[in-house]
Length: 124
Image (tube, rainbow, N blue to C red):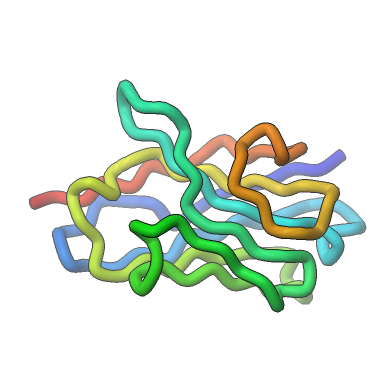
């Protein structure tokens, strides 16, 4: 059974940084495509970024380009989302997701496993 546990969320001021972590259990972690999504109150879940199983391919939402960086540490079975220059509109619950297909993907239904989410709040 695959489990994803996010951490690293919190309250930060505009312009600040946070690094989200997602620890993944499962013997085939290195083969998963991984993604980050977010959901603000009253809004649909929104794609943030994705990384391929090898880490060689990444894909970002336009709002994340240049500010967010997705990385993975296979030895630690963990992926990271470094978020810089945060804005109030980045406030949301951030979810980590994994897919058995190792390629990048931007649609929620393309993912097979989900974490419980971590809250990120950016104050103005």
